[in-house]
Amino acid sequence: MTPAGVESGWRWHARSKVIVITLEPAKLERFAQAELGVLLTEAQLENVPQFLDADLTDAGVMLADALQ
Image (tube, rainbow, N blue to C red):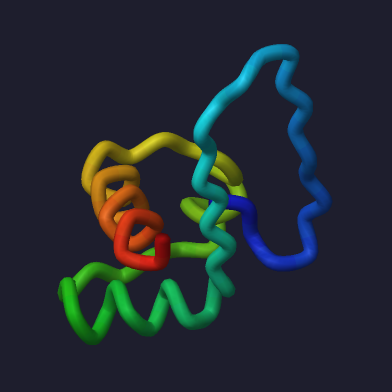
């Protein structure tokens, strides 16, 4: 995850399959509270600007397959 307004970019030196998901922090915060009952703090979003999550990766792969 890369918060809105944070510049990021990647370079690969070999073929790779990559899924980049950009989330708007305010919408993520509302979703977490409404659907998961979790209150996120701004510090949580700032301290982990990019991460790997197996469940999100699996969902992204399914979405990419469906789009193809």
